Length: 632
Ligand code: ADP
Image (cartoon, rainbow, N blue to C red; front, top):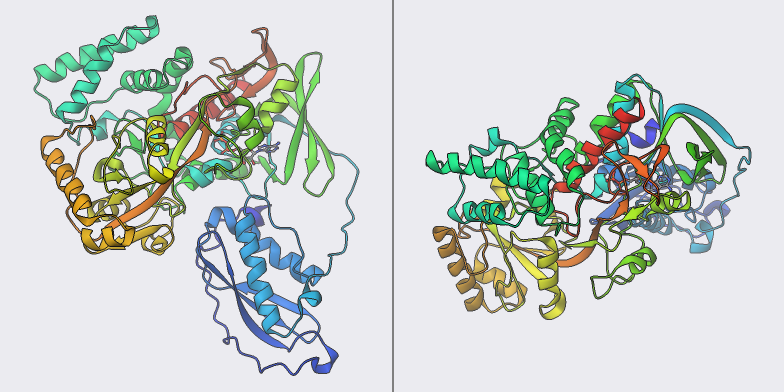
């Protein structure tokens, strides 16, 4: 297990080898398949070329190693570790790709194939069916205080709290590696953090946003309490003639609720906002590190997003690996390639989890204290998207998702089968996404269409931005950055841990001047220049015609970057109904004893529209609450 989860494996594997390098084959040398020697082959991974270095004897594939590659370490490691073993064991490249990193797997297989063909093999020589493994049909049985399904940020946070409370835990994941959507997609975590935010300034348009929120008609007592708290703060802020960036848990809650169109459950949002900063402190104590500057994730609508440093690899790794260490150090068990299929019930009480390993062996894990469902959302399940979607014109398979293949809503199906209530299922979130993963705080960027014109406020809600893009010609947009965005905020490294310049040419463009950039994008230069000039005036005024409120630097310093974005399914706001202890509620409104749920699989927090950066706070906060409560 540890082998697959190892984070020691460097992203850049460079092996010193005698270069590729054997004499040309005299066919059928010694009657063998290959010309003995060491050969290099290339294949296309998710983020670029993969180079395999394969050593062969006349009849056998002896070893496979890899030169540098750009695949994401935490996600693709299982493929780089398992596939060479499988290929050498079976002497064929017709082995299964690894779940969760299919494109990297295919790139690896193609690279090995290329090397073997160079070594003189024919396709038939290296694609024979692998011999069938003997699969045990005997049910694997285990028990622990708590069984957790899913090893994303929610499951891992729950697991860490279980072991912290002295409990025993087994976490299972159907994929070959841990981390789920969290490790792939996560980029920032929201919380009001006044100590740091006070070092930043706030423009008049942001102050007006707060005043407008205070003036909203309260929907209930809880919302009114939040508004009263903010109102008192702002009266003092103005009396003191303050200029710092204001924030508070109450403002975070109010924006979460109002920007989710009041669909969320204010009681859960209350808990969410009160614990947000505590969750950041907790994960920091466990080993995550954050940049000092507070930014605004896309669709965050406020500068309260905490961006992890790249110390643990990708940003998402910071929300999973610290908890993994605690769990493993304290004796918890994490099992990958274990797919849960059913919550085991006895007299209406959740008692365990039943399922099957990837090899086909059944398992039954009994939970002495409780089961936690933390299986994430269903953005990667087009049938389910279509079943629940009510608000987007098209949710079918042709619309891509930012999520990995693991986000198929299994937990929702299992929970519904035993009577759990699902809430807010029709709310599917689309977000602007680019394969090149150059995302940055939006303060220093603009979004333009193919005509070089801005068309929506960049710091608005995700649903509004995506809807606006879908109305542009071609249904895409370019986000334009300059040197301020890239150097100051990200140190030239994308949130996936990959140097930004490596993406150039792969959905991203870079040019020394705006004119060169416009030419590369086939956008009329004069129009783009005017758009940028107008924006730079707006930066001085701290306001513009779209109602944008976040402005920082002018876009005036090369190099300039452009990244093409299209809307993709990203998050499913609805899910299992839970109470403030994360206990699962059934369709009659009663608690299902010993059953808990946390993370994206739950509904009720984000309403109709999740703010960017709010998901990580949700999964860590409620994951922790689930882990604490199941042990009580
Ligand atoms: P969250 O953000 O709520 O933590 P993630 O998507 O990050 O959710 O993680 C959910 C994890 O649950 C993924 O790693 C996924 O592979 C796992 N998972 C989903 N369905 C199952 C299942 N049926 N059995 C085991 N693991 C599952």
